[in-house]
Image 1: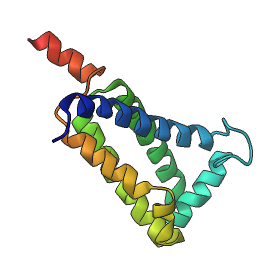
Image 2: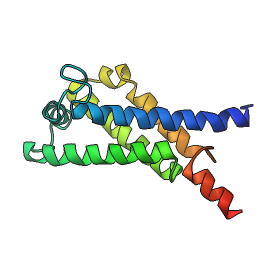
Image 3: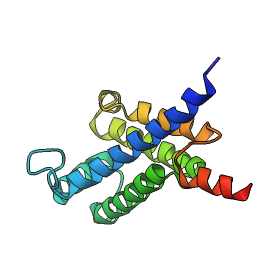
Image 4: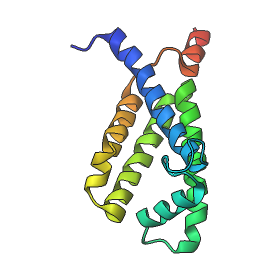
Length: 146
C-alpha cells in the first residue's frame, strides 16, 4: 500500500522535476548556459527540430520550434505553480511521447531511452492521475472552496 502522504509530496517533486527540465531545455536554446552546453543557441535547436521531423517541409521548422518553445515554457510554469495539474501533466505526457517518437524516427530508437524521455512522459501521465498535490494553486483553490 502506498503511503498517501508520501504520494502527495511526491507530486510536488514530480511537478518541480518536470517543470525545471522544461525550463532548462528552453534556457539552453537561448544560450543561457553558454556555447557548447546543451543547444547553445536557437539555430542549433532548430537544426535538431528539423532532424526529428524529417517529414515536414523545412519552411515549417522555425514555426514548430517557436511553438514547442512556447508550449514547453507554459507547461513548465503551470507545473511548477501547480495550476490545472491534471490537464497540464497530461499535455506534458503527450508532448514528451511525441518527442520520443520524433527522436526514434530522426536519430534512432535508443536516443529517447538514453535521455529518459519515455520515463518523463510516464511520470507526466502518473502525475495527471494523482488526486491532489500540496503547495499548488490547485490545492489553494480547493481549500478556498470549502
